[in-house]
Structures are given as structure tokens and as C-alpha cells.
Length: 201
Ligand SMILES: [Ca+2]
Ligand SMILES: [Ca+2]
Image (cartoon, rainbow, N blue to C red; front, side, top):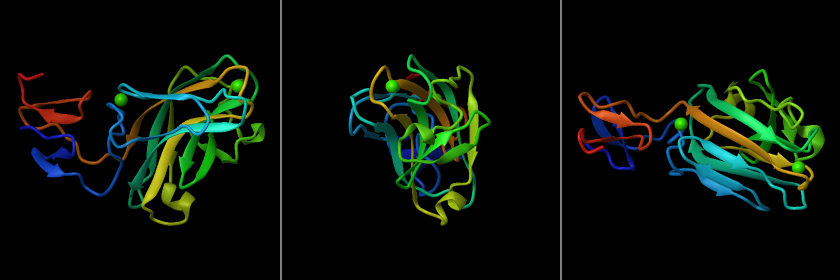
């Protein structure tokens, strides 16, 4: 069975992409994700989402987003695999984006306060709170948004200073996923996130 990039494999059958959940939450390439780089920074996809934040002389966010996300009351979950920087204090920090609002990230897997990009908007994960081990986040985005969506979600890095080095955040495993179960007798490859004929890998 072969499912093309716009279909998903669900219970052994290729289907058109359903309207719920997050598509390609495993970041197997950039399909379905939109780069937002109003100042500078870089976004790359290669099995995870790697965001190198801004360092361009002004406060700015750099983030990847996906619109049309409906979770029907389920929690949105994601992993921050790491956050690193050569800069200090709260000048740079990772952020979660929901419908136009950014939030800092805390090392206990909760969101910080909404932030407009100043140093005071950082969660406990920042230049002085770097992490090289995975932090798992569970967010009730319907409650946070005050409605059922569809939502636009995103993951990125803020720079309050735009100088002295950027922050780098690595994200992965955003759920709930649109259906992409392995096909019986076939192999679903995380790199492709689609069903491909066995033997053609
Ligand atoms: Ca992945
Ligand atoms: Ca900086």
C-alpha cells in the first residue's frame, strides 16, 4: 500500500487527510509547517524541528506554525528536546505560539505567561535555564484559547536583545496526530510518515 504525501494510512487504508489533530507532528520534513522569520534566524526540519532564534539587532520571534488544528478537547502535547544558547540570562528563550500569542516554557512542562518578547516573558527555560534533556509539555489549548478552534499552533525562539548570540530550540512529537498507523504487512517510515511499499525503501 502506498499513501502519498497528502494521504494518511489509517487502519490499513489510505485516506484523505482528516480535519483533526496535528499533521506531521514528527517533523519529517517541513510539510504542513510554515516558517515565520520576520527578522532572522533559521528553521530546519529533519526528524525534528530545529529553530535557531533571531540575533538581528532587534527583539524578534522565529517560529514554525501550523493552522487549522482541531483537537476536540484533547490536550496538545509536545516535546522540547533541548534548549541551548551561548548568551545569558533571559535575553533568549523558547516559546510556544497559539493564535497570535506567545508563551514562555517552563522546565516542569507547563507554559509560562504570555509574552510580547521582553526578558520578563521568559519561562524558567531560558539562557540561564538551558536543558539538554527532553521536557514534555501538556497544554489544554481549547481552554487556553477560550474556544474549540481551529487553532494555529507554533514553536519557536524569542530574542529579547537580538544580539550576543541566539537561542536554539529543538522540538518533536506534537500530538494528537492525524491518523498515520502502520499498514499491516507494510512499513511506515518515520522519515516519510507515509506508507511505502515494502522493498522500496
Ligand atoms: Ca521526529
Ligand atoms: Ca541574544
